[in-house]
Length: 175
Image (tube, rainbow, N blue to C red):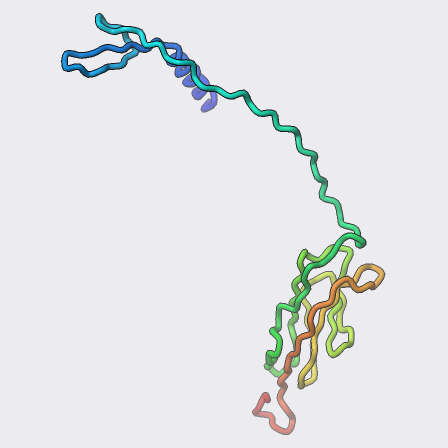
């Protein structure tokens, strides 16, 4: 309904453009323009409106978003975003939550392998890992993106974390 009303209004307004314009001068010398003719009014000859022809835009070829092949696809960045380098993990359980970020995002055919102290802990399509029951002390963490064949595609920098767990010898202290 709204479109019909707009169309009718547009048609009526376009008719106003076809109306003639008249110019007259009142008793005080003011120039008056109107769309209605009066005794002293003269029609105004307007110049032709400036127009430009439309520019033809060539159609763009649609670029299909295809899965990149392993030969052409490259990760720009791989980093362990949590925990921070040289941070302490307290709490007594020795559990470490690890988050990894990859740019561009991890492809579905690739996996992230998480290493602790140079040994593989987990391999997953996820960027979040949980390592449980880690012994107290300093440990190195590193992430590696691998393809289906296990070939390394990108390696993160190694970070160090320090795990603090209660001792049987000193039950009241976590360090």
